[in-house]
Image (cartoon, rainbow, N blue to C red; front, top):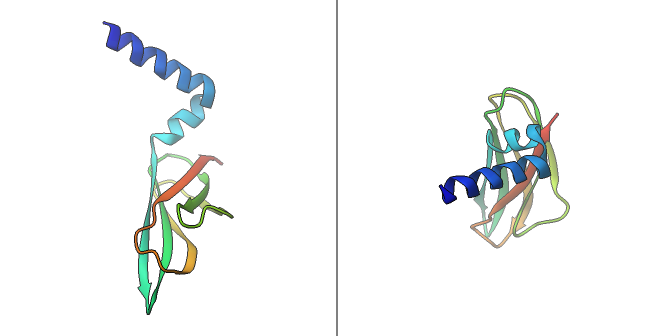
Length: 102
């Protein structure tokens, strides 16, 4: 019973902090990064997959290039990508980002 109460309280806190539409949006999109080798360097690309039933406005970046973030709009059921670095020596970037309902 304590575990259920803790999960319920945590869920309510998420809804209070994010609002119902933002909490729902977080559960229906994902992102990941890939590195394409281009000669002696790597091109970092961040992908956003939108499984929501609405458009998303997203800001994405990697651990290698946190600023400036790249902005992208992703339609329902679509996957979009943005290049965050065209000349990196790192071959394993980690993707980060935030999306909200457009």
